[in-house]
Image: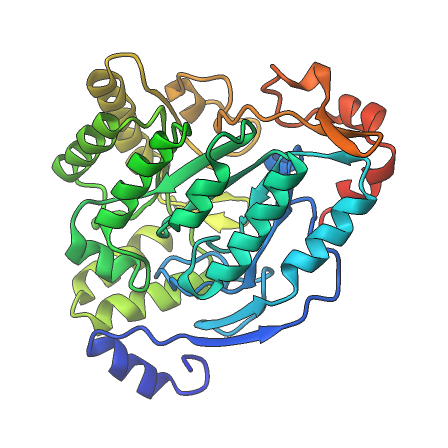
Length: 368
């Protein structure tokens, strides 16, 4: 394992492997929680694992204060479906459920768990959405076919498979994600594309991004989110060591220079690349989305600035960064039904509405 046997770990990385240790545990607490990020407080979340099998070199999951797990360890929450079913039975109101912000819902090691979870949510008629760079199983697509309260986002930053193998070593190939966009559209879900996180000097070249946009827009994505990677010390340390182990020492040094400079701002405890670097490239990306999408595809950024700044928001062609229009649901007798006022509402954080309509779940507003 990386933290305990670094010499062995990096030797295997040099040989093209990215080792992951998979174990399981029984979840003790309620799995449905409110996310930490202020912009997600209008959602619920469910995480299927602690840690993530994809082990991307920029992974936020392994940085404190998140899981606290060693890099490369994945704990599967084996009883997650049972726990979710029990918690839903107690709820009077359910906000749209995000599956799952701290790990990919379609890691190959949780195929059974995600299938069971989707089955429960569809059966209850509840709203949910996911962000994935994984391969979506056919049985999941069959279950969501015709379900009106689902949304999806595909994460893809490059069409180059060699680059993908470096940046997202255990994630499925690019072609699987492109198939995912096609298959989602076939079952009535027109997905969002997340070009996120962009990696300076690796995945932000204009020609590569232009090819990516042409491909995914032709496949039918409705919105593009473009954002750059954020760094915490442990992320930067792992990423640069990984690049060096793969013979990319010059790029690793450029990362140290970029993120340890005095021009690197801090947003939500993440160091970002200097504003001039990010703004120039994201402005170009927004213009390309408008040009290639011919006005039919919208654009936004994510976590590029502090809450009081508007520079990057000037690039948006939507009112919200993540245009996921899913209503809150309330229990009426033994069934859940959408709250009428929420059906056409895109407000992401509606505290007044929440306190009026959610007497049972007020405690879930606490960060968890």
